[in-house]
Amino acid sequence: MEKGIIDMTIVQKKEALKWILDNIAWFILLSMLTIFSFTIKGFAQWPIFRNILYHSVFVGILAIAEAICILSKEMDLSVESILALSAVVTAYLAGIGLDASGLHLNGPATLIIVLVMGAIIGLFNSYFIVRMKINSFIVTLAGYLIFRALGLIITKGHGVVNISKDIVAIARTNLGPMPLMIIILVIIYILFSLFLSKTQFGRFIYFVGDNREASYNAGIKTDRVLTIVFILSGVLSALAGWLLAARTNGSSPSLGQGILFEAMAAVVIGGVSLQGGVGKLSGVFAGALILSAISTVISIVNINPYYMNIIRGGMIIIAVLLDAIIRKIRPMLI
Image 1 (cartoon, helix red, strand yellow):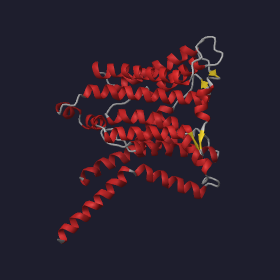
Image 2 (cartoon, rainbow, N blue to C red):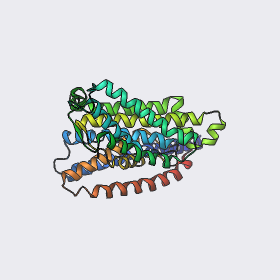
Image 3 (cartoon, one colour):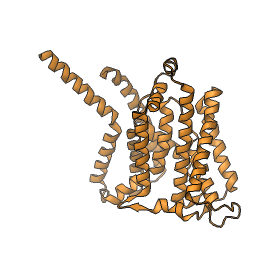
Image 4 (spheres, helix red, strand yellow):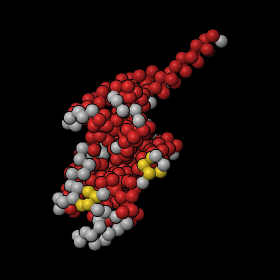
């Protein structure tokens, strides 16, 4: 009897430690917010927290796209350029008084077009990765350059401003105290978290990332899984670009530069293993919020913004080291 109680206590401790490891990004975020609240005057107020949430929208959506790829043990470096190209196409199609376009499409029409475009780009990437068996790093690095260049070609290197008002309204609408953009972000995270954890296909993504050969031998159509993963990545990146065009009321050639590294940082900080098959989107959301909180603090205390890249790089290194430690601990908790 006593041995059974001891065994149960050990199991409970293991489960508690596993839960802590799964949610470590949230502990880091709460610790940071607490420290900032006590050390920075005026930090602990709703407008600041709302600003942190708002500025995590675009990084947060791109981080979902990247996380799904990394969970399947692949990588998509083209997400930033898909975002930029989608913003350019949105502004080009919905611009007011643009002689070059002449279409002046409304919000729903432009959204459908850019989402389809994102899906086609994802399918393009997956063809070379899945069918031609080319490393995803190489394929999507090429995509990173190609799709950014396409945006420059479309705009001829010039920015576009003043787009359809129904698109801009998405970025300026509040539901109570909460901006609509934040609500959209939270809904997307909830939907994709449920997709990964509650659907058979979502579990297949984890299986393929954990052991592709064993998944194939078990009857999982791994090529189809990877194809859909890259299509989803393209669609999410396109959606982020459409929302960014709404936020900026147009687009510019340099729009979204560097956001890839923030998305990657959010994924790694959020606990998604670069080895594939391990991680939750809830942690990725926390990772995006951590980066947004740091950016906000840098702005408040007037630190040189160039230090942000040093901080991001340092956090990625820490997160990778933490991932290595966690991967050693996890087998002991089974």
